Image 1 (cartoon, helix red, strand yellow):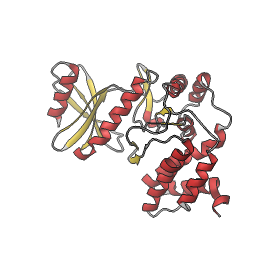
Image 2: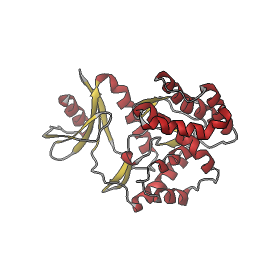
Image 3: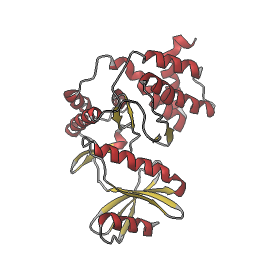
Image 4: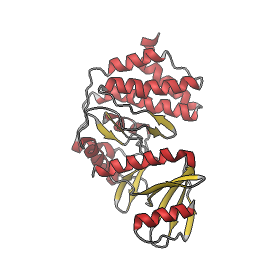
Length: 290
């Protein structure tokens, strides 16, 4: 694999890239990762089996879309490649620290500008993405209530059902979610899609975000999940509000948007997350499902 990595880096950088050091990196819950260097340019290499090449290609495309917006900082993509056994994604290597109050405020402003960037008449994406290791369908849809009810909540409930986890009648829950959002008509915004402490940090150049699960959706979805992670500084909200204030009705939709992430945790990790998801479903739909 490393010959393929060197060759791709040489093509991208316009000079021969000979790897002189490979450092195994910890913390990768999904794929293996290493920092490689030629003594001048450090590169982050994320790699896995060859069949996972489409996941790395999709991540590269999402990072490129976020970078194209000119609003948020993401690692530069150096390339995607494969050899006989492995596929890999090559990114700018960024030593990162956790967000502090100042950089959280700045990141909040950047997110607001991202959400304001460009015009898109529909919700979805040209390709499916992944939320952690869960496939995330992004079929284009004109109506937000239909998109979120079917491709977010309904999708997670179907995955749960295949694992033997039942939270109630799936079609009934989809109908309830669709009805609750029917009068809400947000403009489609490009979302990071999986904004939590492990997917953001501070480098010498400021706040960065990475490991996206992008799609065009309601901007509130990126903000809704933040309270689930109390170690993210609250100033991220202040920065966001200074650019594009959230409507008061956001508070009413927030638990509904959080449910998508809670169901995903339950599907991925089981255990106590299943009970948390059950409690959320009961709180949101209990009276209507009886």
